[in-house]
Length: 57
Image (cartoon, rainbow, N blue to C red; front, side, top):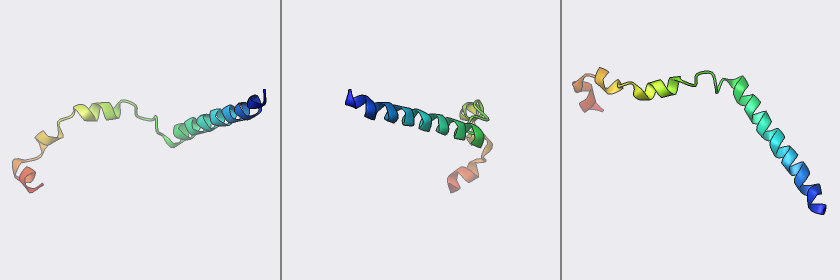
């Protein structure tokens, strides 16, 4: 029964920490553009670079 005294505040604290992290991410714009990264993966950026610049890299 003594373990409840330790685990309950620990679980409550971790839950509040996770909730705080979620609200911080929402406020800082982490979830503003969910599809942008997925579309950037599909774009072929190498085709736009001239062959002479590829050799310089």
